[in-house]
Length: 542
Image 1 (cartoon, helix red, strand yellow):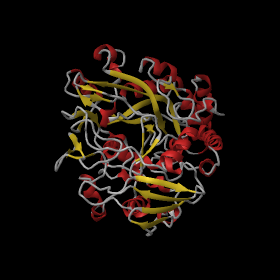
Image 2 (cartoon, rainbow, N blue to C red):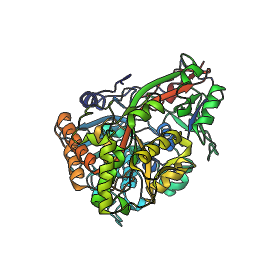
Image 3 (tube, helix red, strand yellow):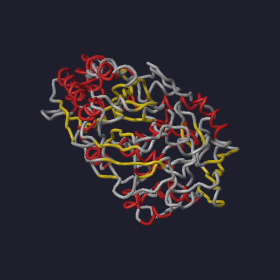
Image 4 (cartoon, rainbow, N blue to C red):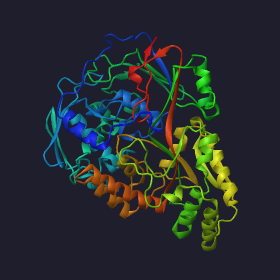
């Protein structure tokens, strides 16, 4: 399945030691590039204002990633590259000294300083701000105090500003791979103006990335988000075009028709209805297909009574075993997905297809019916429906219906999809813990690590923990993996944590994602990175 392999974790750790202590690539501007026009691409309406610490879904994430630049970025293979960081140094993997490159600034002219990072991270971690990416700061000393419920503390003890270009970070425990996370947008800097009115700032954000908003009104809600190159950008992602305009679609079918008519330059997801024909429709040289660090699942909220206790555990396993993954991936996706055997993705090093307990993810209708019957003896299910909430603007209806039909046919219960018009709408219901049934969930890695698939989605209190799952043994295994003295030891702990997930099944993994991208006749140099995201800055007009 590997068309393009990401760097291994071992390789990343070695690369980090080199890249994070040296200067990154440079050169802003578009010298030598064909930057003759704006590129149009698809997206969905962001769930929230565009604040890095409160953006954890793809609609907003792809925009925030272009508006802001962190200490590091990741190249196409997933290797870390210095951006704002001149160096990130440590002698004990617990205490880090971070030095910034000179002459970095935001698009409003303000300098990017050590305080720009420290203030932004403290804001993201503080309980009173209720940021969705709060959990990403949990390794920093003092996080527990500022993130505690009803806490009024605003500053983590582990962050100290030394001078304008230097700050230090003390972690709660040694974590040798901690710097690898710093390319995720949650760790972006923020200008002083952001803290005056964060909501208003998110509607018209001022960043330091390769692009900026194209003036007032650039974000027309539910219509488009227009970006233009940042002329002061000096990092490694220099735009090779005149801007990116993200068109907001209510479904991939309409976007696909615009692509065929050359009214859209880039579509990052081919709708299921066109998977059989898209290569013929577009022709050679106008599409790509390759696996990436992402997966698809359905999350079953642990806060609903029918999924609690022994009966709930039996039912989750029955649901999983009643889903015919091989048939669905073959029929609905024309073989363009691989059935899941665990909770991460094969392109991440450390992946293990044979983790203890993984048989629960195999199609086994007889065992599924047996487990469902056992659950009914404990607590009858009755005539209620098993629903799967999903966003209609994401091209999910076909496979959701197929999963529901598989469950219905094998367990003899009413199972059906529950559509919501937009991704933002269903995400709001999920994050506010108001789900009435299961939820379609997927994960696109923020940085190349097994932990990134596990901690943010299943760690107690994590911002993307939609099912409100909590298991102290699982959390302890995550901490063990993070503090491991070698990548191999960390992998062992993380996969032992997965054994716990396979027993509890807070979510039911379905398949690993493959990015299928198409583009118009008018553009060139289209590719996707290790995480499946198009490399927007390198796309050019023909």
